[in-house]
Figure 1 (cartoon, rainbow, N blue to C red):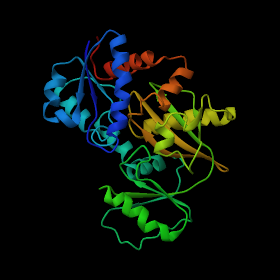
Figure 2 (figure 1 turned 60 degrees about the vertical axis):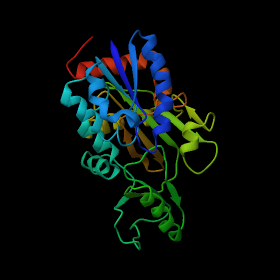
Figure 3 (figure 1 turned 180 degrees about the vertical axis):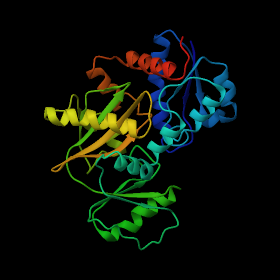
Length: 304
């Protein structure tokens, strides 16, 4: 097939997207596909034309555009298949304040949180105790996220988010091991336990710098925790109306698992979590790419 590999974009996660696209391009070529790389930031006006000239579109975008559902909506409009979730599910997962409401409606436990738009009063204080994580409502990769330990640190943390052009989500800063669990099709993949080697949480450097974090897969946790991670990840996937694949992040507290967020276009760099989890399930990187395309073609009514 002729595959349009879409990467780049103009979000703050552009570099991560381009990095992952390098090995995706190699995998697609290894699978026998004719690959056309399309940087959405440089060629957005020609996106529909480029997609219409291809048989399948492989999206490797992070943040907005990409995880916001915009490219997916355009592709649906012209009838071109792609991997992963459609426009609605993509946007609901990207918007943390929206996804947390759907988690609650589905009975899924998430840390206490507050939403603060950019024009909110600057003297706002959450009604749950410190510490707090302050993060962009639509952001990812832990960019512009701050761990706030004292109330006087809150204004600077909020300003960091607002200056990036986003609204803020303030989340209860719970302690415990960080875990992630991916869904592929209708199956939960082996979960991963994450131990950053520096810093207080799984920040940008821990995620993308080689050897900056221990990522143990399958996670060395009790069988009951492994079962719960898979079950909750599948439930979150369903609650948000997602397709194909996703990856949900958790904190394991003394009172149990707390669901943080769900990613619809997980990272695909050499250090990313989804490929590592897939390997533990017996799937090479090429196998993973082939499976994602198979799911996308099945979901959108076109087969090779």
